Image (tube, rainbow, N blue to C red):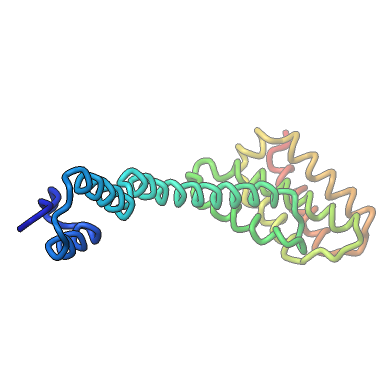
Length: 201
């Protein structure tokens, strides 16, 4: 004789199974006692089953947590790139700055690359000045890059950016006067003068 019908999913809880096996061996119970036992069995069965809402919230929480983690990582990386903009050779963030500049140049369309070169030229001169003023050695490739940037600018860009380029040339001339005898600096200054001479009236 079955005292309990199975739940909609066709299964019995552990308590219901115990009652099914124990009750036939005991004297018949009063209807009130049976109702009490059934209610307790249902309460115990409900406590054994995890609520579905919690599982759904956990399923939603993992992708959200992953997205926030990725967003935090990207935000931190972008922050480091911006912070590296004021670094100079020898600083820990300088390599990140150079990688970001290389990516910037690669992603810029060819007709607009001269604009990027103007920004990079200003940065290289700033770095050279900062190193010389602090008494640190300037890597030779820094002067070579300044020379190359001056020579790679087109005449139209030079004519349009004359005030900035004259200022850059003046900074190089001042550095050459303050730190005489640096041949690579003299070569960079000569390249600046040659570049400006092309567009001079």
